Image (cartoon, rainbow, N blue to C red; front, side, top):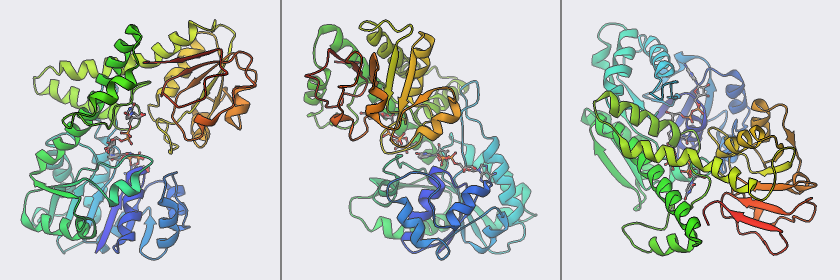
Length: 429
Ligand SMILES: NC(=O)c1ccc[n+]([C@@H]2O[C@H](COP(=O)([O-])OP(=O)(O)OC[C@H]3O[C@@H](n4cnc5c(N)ncnc54)[C@H](O)[C@@H]3O)[C@@H](O)[C@H]2O)c1
Ligand SMILES: O=c1ccn([C@@H]2O[C@H](COP(=O)(O)OP(=O)(O)O[C@H]3O[C@H](CO)[C@@H](O)[C@H](O)[C@H]3O)[C@@H](O)[C@H]2O)c(=O)[nH]1
């Protein structure tokens, strides 16, 4: 099938490479020329396991990239993978979606065949039908509403496991308004739907939009509850990890997403929970539980720095922060809790030396004056204290010998050898 993908960021690039890998002809339409060049040269523009080899294999044949929207006319279906960021007041900012939808409509004005536009971006109920569709249709010529149809297909992939999550999902959700759209989506996903483990949910567009928010709200709430229980466990001197491991044996609860600590960050949970809160309020409903979910999460970095301050006077201290990405195996630092930790440490007068295996270039743009170390051990050299902020592989095997004071506060319950440490403290245990 001929597929175009508008926006080639974390989602657009990943799904383009994966759809090419399962046999489709895919073209990425992206405004950033560096990304376009990178894909066409066979180089992944982001760090994501499994992506580089797929882009290298298919670039120039089944996978191409361009800045020119006219390319969509050669395709049967277009996926919109544009950002849907958070506005200053927490609500959903649709400006980029609207701009992309308009460019798409203008390009489709000159296509006489039927075309399916699929919203892949995370958008609140009503957005596909009330914002995206009219914008595309208005920008195309008259009669466009007869030829162009719309669908919503939320994406559940996670950073760092994006390729396998897309190719081997628990579920695929098609929100459509007619059978032809469903049939097209079935064709796109045919190789993925062959897997027995993948459930297919076919529903209306509005439900598909809300399924994505409900999914993320549920997971973020689960982690905040786990963190609240962890904070209480620490007050009692009980080990939250032992407690929650036992709780997770109950099938209804499950063992997954039970790791307490610094809390959730990333490009999705924060903005999506906030968009849902703002959307609910707009509809006249007070989302009190979701408000608390965010409040608990926002407190964790401060709690970690307070815990460190109990062992090390922070003013003038040299503190190593290990792990800067919002989770391991990605260079994505969007809403990373590590950055909040750095802000609190600097506000308390500490000199921070930071290390991350892949995310330092991204952090450097935001903190050009921070000291960066080439290795975790060199960050620890001479430090008066250290914070473990992201649970990267290899952090369980660190030597703390070079520290001036061997004080470590762990925000992620990494299995380190704490025997030689002066102080080993955990955020929630
Ligand atoms: N990142 C994730 O893990 C994830 C997972 C599921 C869903 N989502 C959702 O998918 C959407 C995209 O997220 P992302 O993380 O890939 O965003 P991103 O910011 O990484 O990528 C968006 C891309 O769109 C490009 N772009 C901006 N305006 C454009 C335009 N007018 N025309 C063409 N390209 C344009 C940008 O240059 C950028 O490369 C969001 O709605 C997000 O909530 C993200
Ligand atoms: O037990 C846990 C699990 C996760 N986290 C934190 O939660 C955040 C999010 O982690 P994860 O969900 O693995 O990563 P994302 O890539 O943000 O993926 C989420 O957000 C995506 C974008 O919407 C969705 O597609 C995914 O299904 C959803 O899991 C990270 O900061 C993790 O450190 C914890 O603190 N404890």
